[in-house]
Image (cartoon, rainbow, N blue to C red; front, side, top):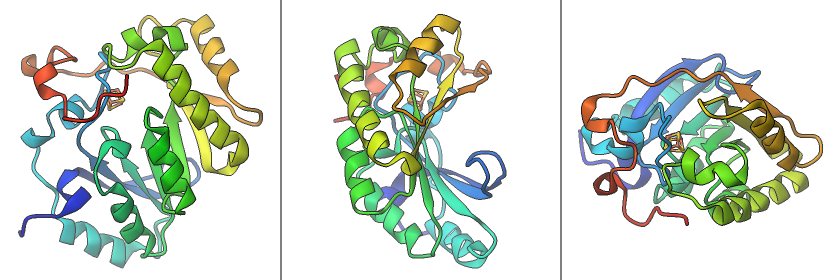
Length: 227
Ligand code: SF4
C-alpha cells in the first residue's frame, strides 16, 4: 500500500454500511483521526487523541467500495474525531462528491470558518453538529479545550448558517453525566427556528489505561486548539 496523501492519511476507520447514522439514508462512514477537543466522555478517544496508534485504512479499498456501491448507498458520512481539523478534508469531500454521493459531515462546530467554506464550495450537503450543552459548561464538557466565550462565538456562527440553510444542518446533544434536563433545555434554546435538538443516549466508553486522562497535552494535535 503506497503512502496515502492529504486527508486520506487521516482515514483510520471505515464502516461499510450504517442504517442509522444519517437519518433516513443508508450511508458508509469514513472516520478521520484527530480532534481539537478533549471531552472526558469521548467514545472515539483513540481516534481523536491518538490516531497514530490506529492503522491507515487503504484509500484504494475505500475508493473501490464507493465506486462499486454508489448505486445503492444514499450517502457518505465523514466523521471523526473532528473532520474540520483535518488538512485537505475539502479535497476528500470533493473526491467523494465526484462519485455522485451526497456527503454528511459530523462536527463539534468549533471551526465555523471551515464549515462555511465547505458549505459554500458545495462539498458537504449536510452537517450534523453536536451541541455539547450550555455555553457555560463547555470548559468542563470539552476537557478545557473550549472557553465559554469561544463556544458561544463559534456556535453562534454555526446557528446563523443553519438559519440561512436549514436543509444543511441538524443538531444533536448527548446526555452525558452531569448534563441536566435544564441544561438540555438551555442548549435547545440556542437553536434557530425550525431546528430540533436530537437527544442521544450516553453509553460510557471503555477506556484503556493509557487513554484514561482525556486532556493529555502530548496527544493534542498541533494547531487544533480553538480557544
Ligand atoms: S468532539 Fe469530543 S467527543 Fe467528539 S471526538 Fe472530539 S473529543 Fe471526542
